[in-house]
Each structure stands twice: as C-alpha cells, then as structure tokens.
Image (cartoon, rainbow over all chains, first blue to last red; front, side, top):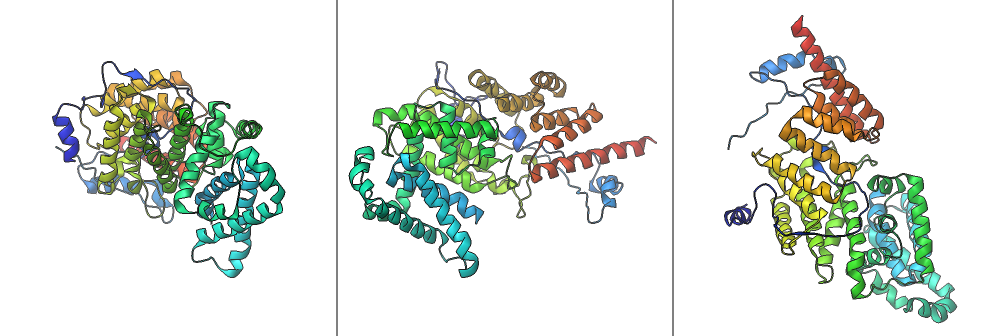
Length: 86
Length: 414
C-alpha cells in the first residue's frame, strides 16, 4: 500500500497510536453502553492449540493418538505455522 | 426468503412511512407484513418470480393504493394538515424507486432519532424499524434483555406518534443533534453483521454493506459529513476488509490467525485509511476514531513490535471515553499480548463478567499454559452461556483439542 507508506514517510502517522494530536478535544456526545465489532475476541479467539514439533510428521504423530479420531469421520488437522520473517 | 425479508422489509416500511406519515407506522408495518405473507402463500404454488423484490414492491404499492383510496376523506382533508404532504397515487410511483428507497431509510433514521426520546430508545427504534432487527438482536447490541427492549420500543413509538410528525427530514439545524443516534444505529447494524451472537449465520455481509452505504450517504450532506461520520466509516471499512476471509464456503468461521491475507480487500483497507485521515482533519477524538485506529492495526497481520502496545494504549484512551464491558474485555486481550497472561488474568478476574461467554473464552485462553484445569472449566462455562450453533461448535472443538493435548502430555509422562 504505497499510499499508506507515503503518509508514514511524511511522519504524519504517529507510531503507536495512529493519528493523534496534542490538543485534540474529545467529541462530547451522549453515550449508551453497547456492544461493538471488537475483533480481538470476536475474530481472534478460538481454541486451537499450537503443538511444538520438529516437522509436520512429528506433529502428525501427536495427532494420531487423539481420542477425536475414535469418532467416525473425525479428523485432526495438522498445519505448519509459518513464521514470516520480514 | 428470510434473506429477502431481511433486506426488503425495512426498506418497504421506510418508504411507506414516508407516504403515510410516522403516525401510521403500524399501517406501514401491516402493509409490509401482508405483502410478505402474500408472497409466502403464493410463491410455493406459482413459483418464485423472476424479480422477487420487484414483485414485492408492486404488491405493496397496490395495497398502499387501496388503503389510500379507502381512506380518501382522510388523505384529502386531514392528512395534509398533519404531515404536510398528500399521499397521491402518483407519489407511490416515485416512492419505490431505488434512489428514493435509500434516501427514505436515511430519512427514517433521522426522524426516529428524535431528541424527544432517550438515546437508547432512539437506537432501539432505529434498529427495529430500519434494520428489521429482532428483539434479541437489539438486546444483544444494547446489553439488555428482550422484555426491556420491547417496552422501550413501545413507549418510543407512542411518544413519537403523539408528536404528530411526518417523515420530512428535520430542519438542517436539527441534524447534528440527531446524528449521534443515527451513527449509533449504523454502528450497531454493522456490528451485528460483523458478528452475530444470536443468529446461526454469524457473519452477515448484507448488514455490513447496508451500514457502510448509509454512512457513505451521510458524507454527501455537509451537515452530516463530520469527524464522527468519517471515523465510523473508516472503522467499518477496516473491519469489512476481512469479511471474505472469515468464512469458508460452508459458513464455517475462519479465525484471524488462519485467514488467507490474499482475501483481505486492499481496496477497503485503503478506504479505511482514507476516511481515518479525513476524520483527523477535525482535530477531534471520538470513540469511533479510536476504534478505527485499533481496527487499522488489525489490518497489519505481522506482529510488528509496536502493534500490541499501540492497540493497548488506544484501548486505554477508549476506556476514558467509554467503559463498556466489550471494551474492557478486548483491552485485556491486548494487555495479555503486552504484559503477559498472568497480569491479564488478574485484571480479567476483577472484571467479573460471569454471564458473558467471551469473558470465559478469554479466561480459558489466558490459563492455557499455566492452569489447564482452569482452561477446561472456563471453556465449559463459555459453552453453557453461548447461544449460536457456530459458537458452540467452536468451543466444543476447543474443548476436544485441549483434552487431546492433556492426554498426549499424560502419555509422554508415563
């Protein structure tokens, strides 16, 4: 996103808090307590457990012992988690 | 059919209120309901029409015409005095055109968000009439229960009818005062589409799209093109950018960590950033602005060192403005990323939101490494409290996987 990077390069994107100002006023409006689209929990929390293994073969070995597999048609998914080094 | 009802019912009501005036909101609702009833009764036999929406509007138009003709005396003598408009059959033709429908929705939002009724009542009514929300959906959005919401809506309708208004757009100078309620309604409409706690279809893109379109319309009017409107649009664009990546074809949820970034809409992310910049022109800070800034960070999947500290400080700022449970909960997630699980657990336990299944899911997550039995118990609690099938499935699979890991550990320790 070159456009975003351009803004960052101009120093206008305050690192850490987005675009904020020293003397910003808070918008004063009536409030009611509501829910909202907060992604940390609604979109992020799940429950898959990360298994530390040398390779997917070893991880698959762990999976073989899973009681889930005793159920017909059940599978245990083994996935390699890529660590993106940038 | 449910999808059609969802999208067309409220639009139809909005247009009919425009014709009949708000004091006849029940007539508008009746005609709309009758129209859908007729569809449900005839389509199974005659087949679904090629253009279902057009069929619905044609039928609604006829019913409205009949209603007007039956009440000729009323419409010619009495109504103009009350609403300032005359419901002529010709008006009906124009009324059901596409552009007019969206305008009607927005108009109705402004009419309903009348300062004469409390803000929460405004929002209840808006969600009910405009968005076709069920009582449970409104209750979830406003952290309340169905009975309380029902009462609020009933009283609000009565009060607005007593005020004897039509659906003309309020005076220009009144718009800013009403904008708050309008934005809240749009925000909650989006939120329900982003993630529903009462509907088995957890993600409903049509609601998100509708919310974004309504906010976009607001930008076209200088009175309503404000810091808050831009900030709200920004936050919606950022969150909406991932909607395609969040579901499989079968409607299964894909969590953030597993999402295919290639499916994230760069167009929407850029729009989000554009509107965030626009909002910044006012040198104001609002709840929507802070949430948009947080939402920005979620478009950055890589765990940059400043990501979670930024999100945490944004939540700290947000807490100063709004202390809603959702904000407190999600802030603790961010806190755990910055200060570790132990500190997060301490703060979370202080919150004591024991009737909230997200509270238990977060607790389970935080206890994973150090107290597996607590994780298990917390997951069980979450399972008891959640309502949708999808959430039950997600939690059940977490329980299974966690039990599985526990048994593997046992195996290796033998």
